[in-house]
Image (cartoon, rainbow, N blue to C red; front, side):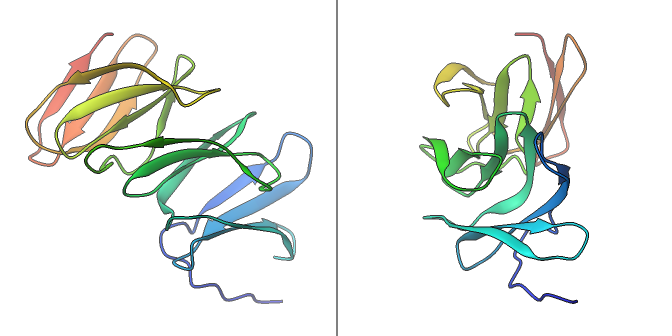
Length: 158
C-alpha cells in the first residue's frame, strides 16, 4: 500500500513509540501531523495543528518536539494533543530542536539561543550568542555547539 501526503518538511521520523511498535510521524503543509504504522503506512492518528510543522522534530519519552516558524511544541506520543507551545518573538531558525540536559534548545533569527523546559516549554534560560540567525545546534555532554547562518560555530557551556 502506498500513501501520498502533502508532506512539507518531515519525511519525517521513524520512531519506536515507548508503548507501541515502530511508527512514522509526518507533518504536512495542511497543518496536520500524522502518526503512521511503519509496517504498512496505515494512518493511526491525525492531529490538526494551528501551524505548518517544519524540519525534523526530536523525540523522547514525553513525545514529539515539533517546530514551526513561530512555535516549538510538544505533541504527546500518541499524537492526540499538543502538550505545550512556546512562541518566538522573532522566528525560530534552528532546523531541529536539540534535547539536552532536560531542555529543548532552539535558536532564533536574532542569534538568541533558548533553553526550554522539556516538560513545560517554559524558558529556563536564553542567551544572545551572535547577531545572525542560528542554523544548527549540536552537543556533547558538557558543551552546546551553535552554528550560525554565516558559518560560525560557537561553543557554549551554560
